[in-house]
Image (cartoon, rainbow, N blue to C red; front, side, top):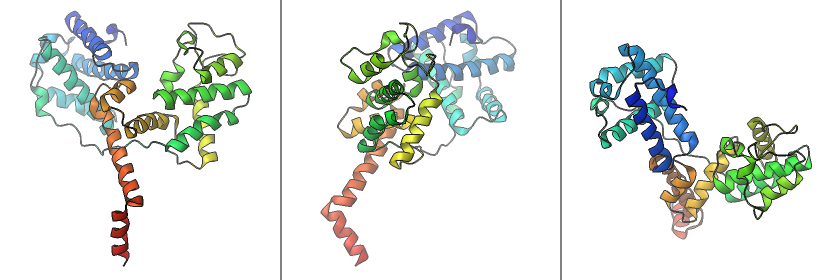
Length: 299
């Protein structure tokens, strides 16, 4: 999102530029996360501009009151924002204000008086290792052409093997393609009948244009039906599976955070809940003490 998109004076826009650089550099947030944070901040600044009748500056943050932030949340509710969107937007504002405070650029205590909306904790729904692996290898069977099957295998491999979002995988350029030792992607490139330009998309559709994400989603639906998987088995579930399986194999939470491009560790920590549930299920099914406890209950 260009800085010109933010309704702000030059000093505030410069601070936003520093914040974005910090998110991408020090926090290693993904482009998807940075764009989402930018949209939330832009919405707030649009509201402030209308609310106070002028472009907000760095100094304006010192003058904002809890009532101003509540008015912003009320406006979002009027426009049918759900609780998740409200909570994320408020979290972005808190993070931005903390950044300004640490850099000595601006400060406000108004946000301390606000509570984030209560959210029902959402736990990612990963596939099992066997199901994720099977999905990757059979997706090619549902393509209309041989090269398209290799393409679909390559895409799901990136989702499960690298934890990419579907939008990130489809956003790859041909010049960013992995080296030849990455056999799955190399198979696709060797079979693709279209001349792929270096700065053009890596994954293309039947006519050589950018691949529509809906095609990948439909292929995953076919896989789901063939393997008898639940509706939660989407392309994004492969990203969840990547993180959960790494964690289950002893992967470091901070390292997984970096690989996923999460700006906040708390987002990555959701996968610990999944792993805990899995371990408890294994214990309950296999440990002798768990079996004895079940026998006592049924006896």
